[in-house]
Length: 177
Image (cartoon, rainbow, N blue to C red; front, top):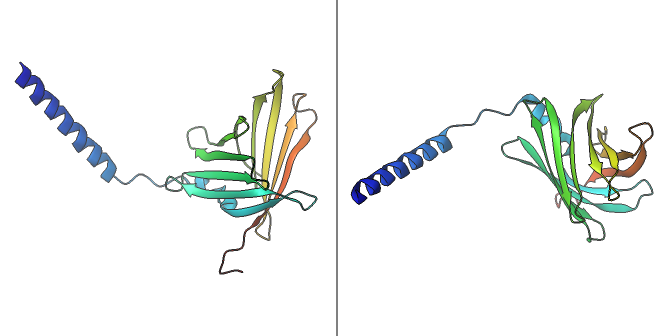
């Protein structure tokens, strides 16, 4: 009986390994065209506020074969950081973002391109237990810069207040300096 169990386990392990290798060798399908809609945000950025003060630095890279963007944010003071994963959901036909930062904030947004701008929105719960609507708009500018305008509403979207207004300018590479 023990011999049969060992042989059966060995066969199952062999089938699993062969199936895994076979799956790894298959080329995944290309991402849908919508997966490149947010590519204007890819790059190494210095982000300034409307007053010209540097707010921080953001690195946006394409990951998973062009299926997602990974954001790595660091404040200018270096005391605050955050990351987001952004991907086009072909089934829902929406872009989705999942953000988490060193302050413990988590934000889930979804949306898409509206008039040439990426607009993602969602809801969050405030520390007091209330609901806050969130809307972030990324606007690609003709000069290659990007504006990120984050707005919040605590009255169901009747009025909006700016939470962050950032101007993204690509950082110079050594060849550009």
